[in-house]
Length: 354
Image (cartoon, rainbow, N blue to C red; front, side, top):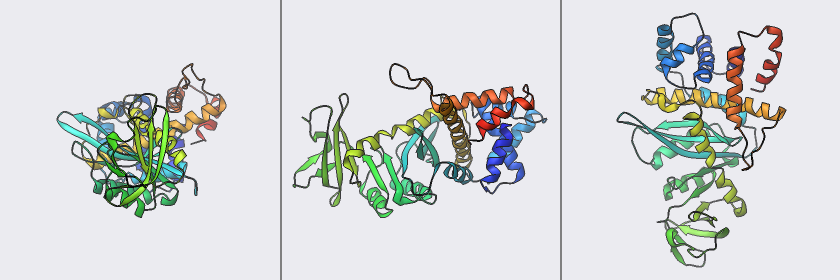
């Protein structure tokens, strides 16, 4: 039943895929949910069909070597999550791991949904270390081809700064909330000049202060928010937004992309198991994982609406929406052959949310 539901979603999404590709993607999503690993040998063993394991493996190799664009999955995700005119929160960050001596360094922009940042576009940097301004511009331009810049807000950490980068965001009419480094030179509206590392050193803990019209990078004027938490170091946020009291809460949602990376790696699909290093193949795998992540999240949300997930004493849910949906999808796949058709109606109702 799950395979047919995925096929229907792909067909209705008006994606430019052949019937055979849609069939393989549907079976591959089910295999990912079962084995929770991107290792192709494991996926080949769980791929449904009468063919031999070696035949399944070669079919997967041909698929990841094909010209299928990851934008197929971006279109599907946007069609499911984005509603015209509604504000959209984007998060930019990198994830890094090593395969032998090879650095796998992926720059990603995700769309925040239900506390998780669903990856929309991604780029394998093929180098260790930070991204540069050109790579960020290229990635965000791809994202804005699917979204209205006027309703988007980009959140990012200290890596993603620079005069040229901020000027590009202002040119694109995108709101942003980005954390500054300690070596950033700041000039307040009264002419006082400070460095981020020594800015408001004696500020009481648990307080927030706002500094409109702060100049940095010799002439770029933006708004500054300084927050000193109860524990930890001070946080300096630069933004072009005017609702400064909301900026700290907006930046707090940056953690959604860390949750995403955890779901793609140790808590979900073990992304680091892949031996794919070619950028195009890795991008296709990430697109497939993003679509599967959203699928599990939608099912988990529907289950939570039916029966709310209990909250533990520390204030957090007993289980995440993603894990709840992933476990339910796994159970549906395992029980599919054992259940008569008349008992599958509740599964059809559950999967209809996706």
